[in-house]
View 1 (tube, rainbow, N blue to C red):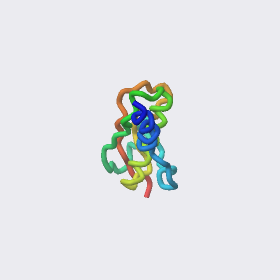
View 2 (view 1 turned 90 degrees about the vertical axis):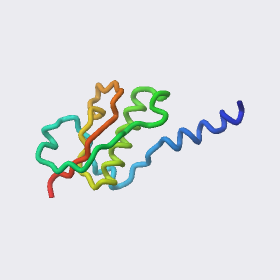
View 3 (view 1 turned 60 degrees about the vertical axis):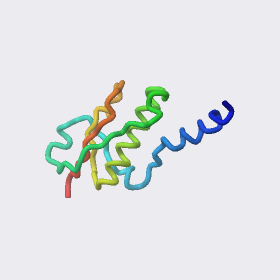
Length: 102
């Protein structure tokens, strides 16, 4: 029992995605019109293993961070996802990465 309690903070940290300068430039939007003229790069999943135990706002923040990080890895400028909607209540955390502009 004590061992499980000691591992809980480690599990919480492993579910975190640390933003970096590339992921901070990725825009997550729920407006398809924003990415209408952009090149589709791929599908992403923003789910966290702890998503079901996090409060809704924390789950949304974690999903946004994962989508931004995943988009940055693909070289995206934007990610289209319903998670961007401030009224998001889940459960979908999927997104589509796009490269817009250049």
